[in-house]
Structures are given as C-alpha cells and as structure tokens.
Image (tube, rainbow, N blue to C red):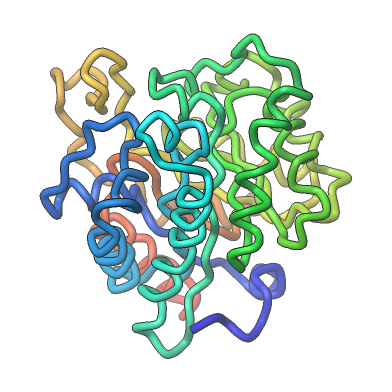
Length: 315
C-alpha cells in the first residue's frame, strides 16, 4: 500500500524509522551473498528472500524500506550474462518487492530506491575510498540509466547513498534532476570528512540549492561520526537529515565482511549504538530519517522504533 501523503510531507511532521542492513537479514535467512552482485543477485534468483527480509524490517517497526538495488547495475548484471531488458525488469522488481512487503501493514510504508555508488559495482570496497579516476560527466553517464529505470518504477524517493566523495555526489544529483522522484543524498564519512577526504560542509553544500533533495546526511559510518555530522548537514543545507550508521564495525576488504574494531576478527560490537540519549540528540540536531546500515538487523531497528515511539509519547 502506497502512503497517501508524500515522504517530504511526513518529514515535516516528525521523524520516521528506516530499516537496517538488508544483507544482514538475508544472511540470517541463510542466503549466500558471496557473489559480486551481493544482495542484488537475489533479484534474479531469490526474490522471495528479498521480500521476506523487507517484511522482517516492517515487523520490526521500519516505516521506510530501502530496496535491494544498491549493487544492481546494468554493468554488473551484464557480467552475469543478464541482458539490458531483463536488468531493467530486475531493477523495477526491487521497488515492487519492497512495496509488497510494506503492504502487510495498513498504514503503508515508504519505499526508497537505493542508488549505490560506482564503487559498489566494482565489488572491491571502492565505495569506502571514492576517487575512481572518472570525471563527474563519466559518473553521471554511469548513474543516469539506472536512476531513470528506478524512478519509472514508482518509489517514494531515490536513496543516493553511501557516496564517498563530492565528485560522485555532483554526478548523482545531476543524473537525478528531472527524474520526477525526490531524492536523499547520504555520504559515507570518516570523522568530519568524506571517505575521499573532502570537508563535510563542502560536501553537504552541494545539496543546499537542490529542490529535489528532501534530506541529506550520512550512512555506512561509525555511529560516533554520525553524532558529529547531523548538525552540520542541517545547518549547511537547511534540510531534514537522514542518518543510518553501522553498528561500529570496520569493513575488511580481504574477507568481504565487517569486523569489530578492537574485538577480534569477525566480532561485532556487543552494545547497540541506539540509546535514548543518542537518538534524542540526533533528533535535536535535525535528524528525521533514522535507522541502521551494515550489522544493524531487525532487532536494532526495533530498538529505534521503540525509542522514537517513547519520545513521541513523551516518556
């Protein structure tokens, strides 16, 4: 069920709960994500698993579902022998699967079509470095066809997410202009800079004058980096802030997985990053879309939903 009001309108009224890491729930369901297409592979040979993962987040309290198209690109599908027409259908299916999963609740769920960075297509951790050696124009040409296909599938917003540098942000914003669907722009960051090392105030400023951008913020970063980024995003752009960090781990390129910093290989942080004080501070600083990224599963999103509900009720 598609919500009757717009996502931008809902953000003007208060905060909404995002989902968590789609791949985390897919792994919990027993799926193999070792393929270069990662979770996007299941659009082709396991769509029921994707819908089930989305549904798990809806049951946990998510109000916005992010589609399985983060690593779904025409180029990536072509390497698997998937033709362009079939790839277009799979991209559109990513929106339909999230929409169907959201239909299990009467109030409706917003769907954010994920547009991952160029580095995600490389499947080598490039999204945590940026600076691919491509021009803004070349990156725009890469992103535009997928953006057009996803926009035509009817999501409520395009999630231009895990963006590592300002060149790619500029390219994504250019490619999304005129697509007919609002967007949010979300950087992956380290401290007060993008992963490529650019100052965050300059990075956020790219979205300040873009009418089609309904939120700006950070994802796929340490929770402590999110703490310091939210106020800067809000003050630089005057827009609602989207924030969905990881659970405090670091990406290990060799193992293609997340490891807890200082806790041994493969370990995850024992404590949730979502505390009442932190969520309250995020909202006070301007966060209106709050959720989790890698290593945050449905239980973490249930915590966010419960804490935000308690805040709303004045408890």
